[in-house]
Structures are given as structure tokens and as C-alpha cells.
Image 1 (tube, rainbow, N blue to C red):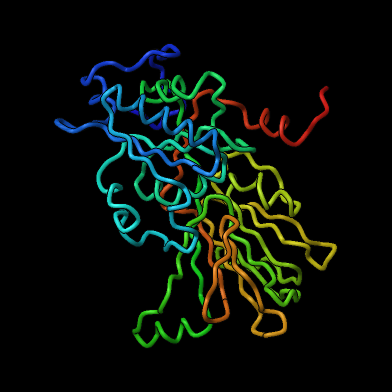
Image 2 (cartoon, rainbow, N blue to C red):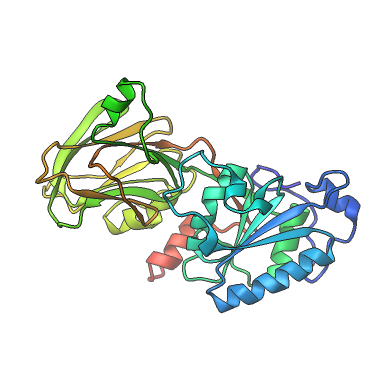
Length: 337
């Protein structure tokens, strides 16, 4: 069985060999009388990923497993409400248990898949057929060898902090005080970040934020990013934020183009809560909310955005554990000592 530990020391499956016996398959996650199921989420717009999905389905069926294949474009976007909804509303085949999820694409495929895999609490093996591979595994040894190693347990599993985002729009507090339900989703999930950015009018945003009830700053600018450690290599980095090792359990708060000389990024602790408050002035409160790059629309103006670490981590399966510092050196820095 795939286990949540740094290194699972079991014999590797040699390249090209299959896991042969039903007994072994059941021990790695199947239930008595049922085939162990493996979820495959592919970017079928990517020809290499599409070819790999056919190869992977044939391999899993050959060793007695039940593959379930989905196209990443059929998964819900960021408007999918955090912790709500039933998985079979997305696809009836998602009902029941899965031992492993495999994504075929790039980091974007992992991000989109994470919305359902974290809800299912299924570890994710990302196979890189895209550009950046911070979340994915390179498949230099071949996709089948990588998957076979994961099924044998010869892998490590990283638990990555996710984000829960709660949005309060104009009038929500009054509706709740009256004992009524607010219409429309207000709680969301992210792996990388949430960004509060200036809206379609392009006007500067006036906002303040606090951490766990402690006032930190008020500023004007293009907005604010609240990222996880995983997201520190994405939009937060482009906005001037620090590179943060994925083991950090807190959040990174990064202003976007602030109109000040004194703005700095802030790293929080794991249990902190970041609350962003927009100034109640229509000249400076027109914003758009982006979650992992997807824009969200609301019928009423946004007043507050509350961000905390999510309840369920993203469980990433690593075939060959590469140092985070080696990755950032290779990706962002070109000079050698």
C-alpha cells in the first residue's frame, strides 16, 4: 500500500516487469473480491499525454487493475465549492475507492486534478508531459516503470499544504444574521494561490490585511497574493515573493505592484488566518478574484477574503525524490559555481 512516509523501502519493480499476482494487488489497496481502481487524468489535448494514457490503460488492465480514465478538461474549475458536492455529480465512475491517481500532462494538470483527488484523499502520481515539472515526475525511465514503482510502494509521498478560501460579498453578513442562506458558492480550494487583483476597470485597489486578528498593513496597488509554499514558485514569485521549500506549512502573503517603498512579503505559520479587507469605496474596490489562475465572478462586490491552510493536504507521489533546491537551481538560475 502506498504509505505516507518519507521513503517507503520496498524492492523496486524492474523496468518493463508487471506486478503479476492478484494477491499482491489486493495488498496494495484492493478490497476482497474487487479490483483495485486507478484514476487516470490526462490532458488529452497533449498528443504525448494522450498516447501515454492508452499505454497506461493497457498496462493496468494487463496486471488486473481497473483504470478509470478522465480528461482534465471535464473536471470542475475553481468555482467548485470547497468541500461540497458529490463526486458522482462530476462523473459517476468517481464513486468508491481509488488506490492511486495518475495525471498525464504538466503541473497544470495536477492543479486541476487536485480539486477532486484531495476530496477523495487519493495520492497523486504526476507524469510530466508538459513544460514545468515542480509537481510532476519526469518519466525518463519510462511511464510504465514509474507507475510500477508506485504500485510496489518504492516511492515517497509528499504532503503539500493546500488553501481554503472563504469570500464575503456585500450583504452576506446581513443575510446570515437574518438566518438565511447566502446564494452562490463562497468557499473554495487552491493548491498554489488566491490573488485579489484589480478588476476590469483597471483601477488601483485599496485594501488592508491582518493575520490571525493582528493588523499588518493597509496599502494601494494592483492587489494581493496569498500563496502556499507550493505556490511560491508560481505567481507569487513573479510578484517578488520568496522561494519557499514545500515543507513549510504556512502561507506567503505578497503584494502585487504596491504603490509604496515599504512593502514586503510576509510568511505566516501553519495555523494562521489571513483576512484581506477591501475598502468600502467603489473607486478602489473593483477587484477580480483568481484561484490557481482561474477567475471567479460574484453578483455582489467582494468585501473580505479569508484564507487558511486547507483541511486535507495534496499527497504527491515522488518516484525519484529531487531536492527542491536542485529544482529551483535548474529552473530559475543558470550559472554554475
